[in-house]
Image 1 (spheres, rainbow, N blue to C red):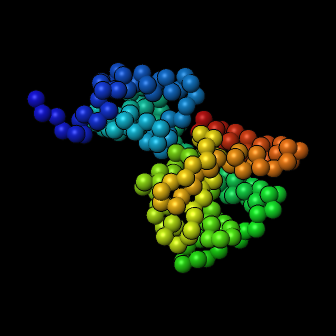
Image 2: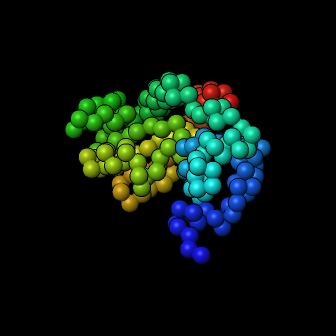
Image 3: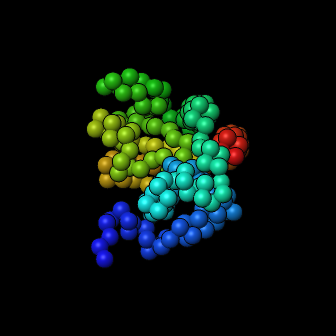
Amino acid sequence: MNYSKASTRGSRKYPNKASCINEVRRRLREGLPLNYSAIRYQDDALRRRTTYLFGGWNNTLAAAGLNPEDYRTDTEMASFYGIKFEDTIDQLFTALAIPFVRQPDLFGLRPDFTLRNGVWVDVKLSEWTVDTRNCETVEKYTPHCRLLTIVYLRGREIDRMYANNARLIHVNNLIKQLPRRTRGYFYGEMAKIERSLAEIAA
């Protein structure tokens, strides 16, 4: 019997509806995010399989006994905390004595910050909103700068370079460059934003 690619993607890991629902419930028990963007980044096999078996991620959540509306990020509040995160990065660059210009207009584009030597910086609340293979920010900005650095708050604590002159770095890796006595303030501010985002999601 022939199966289309759409019907078999993720089928080894998630062979049936029950296995998908079990995974959703496992993520719920472990406090892992269940919004669509996070699933797409963290386990795209699950997303693809549930699209085929249930007709979409929201239908999967409903089948698991969850209200999909409870797992959507409030975009207005997320935008508010995105600006708050950006303001804190402004303070962090100042504390690190890194010269910067905030939101310049370059080539009709407005990166969050520009540094010396052609480095542009964009800030994101979550690592999983950044897919360097298919990210609008990367596609738009990298042709115009020597290096695009994306600083994010939620996700793995990494500092990683990509071939398309993009760098992905967790904000904690910047905070660690501060003297120990001044790190606490910034760790505290990041924790406040993370808690607020968690409350929105909850």
